[in-house]
Amino acid sequence: MLDEANRRYRLRQVSDHLFAFTKEFVLRKGKRIRPLLFVLSYKGYAAKPTRDENSLFTSAAAIELLHDYMLIHDDVIDNSSLRRGKPTLHKMFDHKLCLPNHVHIGKELAIVTGDILFALAIASLTSVKENLRRKEETLKKLAETAAYTGAGEFIDIVSGHEKIDDLTENRILLNYTLKTARYTFECPLLMGAILAGAPASERNKLSRLGLAAGQAFQIYDDMLDLFATQDVIGKPVLTDLNESKKTLLVFKAYRNLHGKSRLQLRRILEKNNKTLADLDALRRLIVASGSYTCCLEMMNKLQKKAGRLCEGLKMKKAYRKTLQSVIEKLSPSRMPLELPRS
Image (cartoon, rainbow, N blue to C red):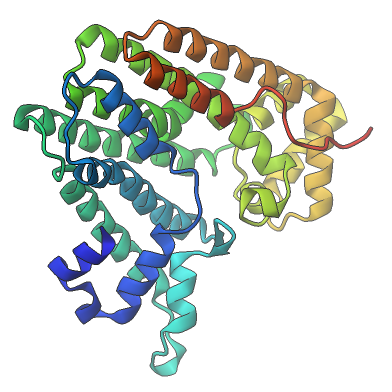
């Protein structure tokens, strides 16, 4: 797909780095959950699935390209150095481009590269040989999701600079819905169903399923970011803490703590340069406050809700069973983390 894009848009003629870095970034090891959900939903509902599977897979890649576009911009906003265990795209440009006076323009080039990937996502989605009206509706869903995710990023940036006392649980959950649940779960499921011509009643179930599974996944992801190792999460363990991300895990801990413990948590969040000792202290506060257990229970409840909704889908049995298995594995009830000892 990327080689075809290079031939069509002559990316390599613009810059060898543009094509090579983009290809390397997009092909890095990842879950690829979005195109998988897209294909499962489409095949689960299509009365006569397209015989051209290559065009279907190219179309499914659109939601993954949208994801890569957002990751690139997110890394620039957060000034991150690692993504999936390797240098972020803007760092790659800075390290490899030798410009006069050692000028660094990696962030600017990464933003532009992300924009190119967004354009490629739109082009990819139109590849599948299917009903034109349904293709148009699917494209609208992709655009709608990009807007929702941008709104979630807006909330994320603002909340990073707000005091934790000013936040609410509903606002945090809204961010989870906009930034994760819609474009990681709901969007690919609905795009596949729309393309296949699934009825409105099934789309409604898929929407509710996607939002529940997405919120469960985000809670799980928050736990990994604070309690897992760099090898597991593919980025420095202090990344989210240095960004003062006020996740549900942190928010509930703050609300449950009192006195010196609450003050300690707030000081850690407001500190400019956090250390591994700060991370260890935050972990202990989260566990001691009951927030870890509470969020784990909430995650499991959302996961069960998604499972019930999945069981009620009227898609082909084999694809429904596979979908249920995928969702269960993405936010497992047993966390592979070693909690700090009190």
